[in-house]
Image (tube, rainbow, N blue to C red; front, side):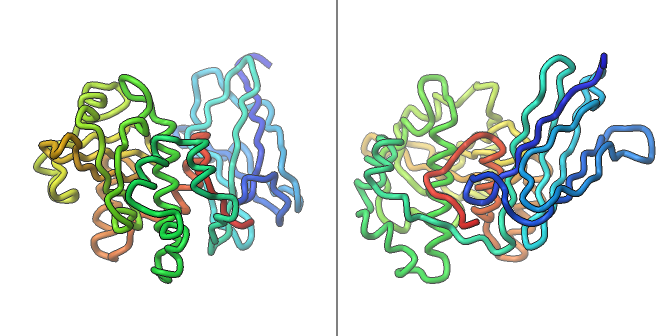
Length: 295
């Protein structure tokens, strides 16, 4: 049918395996439709169903849709934008994770990190012994698992992010100690030329130094990735010391106005950005950290 597209939806569990869990409610909406009924699809998938084809989706005007998924005992998740083409099927992969997610680091080791990300391995192992990193849950019973997940989320994002030359991970030089592995960020030494590798890129915005100093004290030179969700922020000290530059690297759930609200909420509630929500958003971007969540 002219002017319509096909969306092939694949549902995955927290371990990145095809969904085999309870019924899933799926809703496809057009947030920009003029009519009061913005829903195009509202159906419930039978238990264990992990593939569905949505046919006849209007695609004549470059429509952008939101896909919502819900399942009992799991966090709701939405994907935006879903933009079907009118000539080829559009694949969409969606992950649902438990309400109380638990990370699984059983397949992770420094050897695995070295194979997948040699520069990050060199930086981390230079200041943090493998036993200390893997032992974080014992040393910090409340936040150890969260800190490990945050580090590996950021590693994966850096590995997937292109700069002027090479990938962002290529410029990471050293973790000074285990305290550099925080609940929502890493504090690391990077190559002194890293800011120049980001400055002027169309994929990043340079932030106002005074504003950034409020939330990233000591790191006034900052760049934020131009994506709606799961945005990498690279913040740097003004001047290098001993050949490297101190950096504060984190991933924000939202961008621009949404991020401002996220910052205010975190300050009021004393919460940090949830690494397991980041894990799902990275999946949406086709990025796979070197750990999984238990299904």
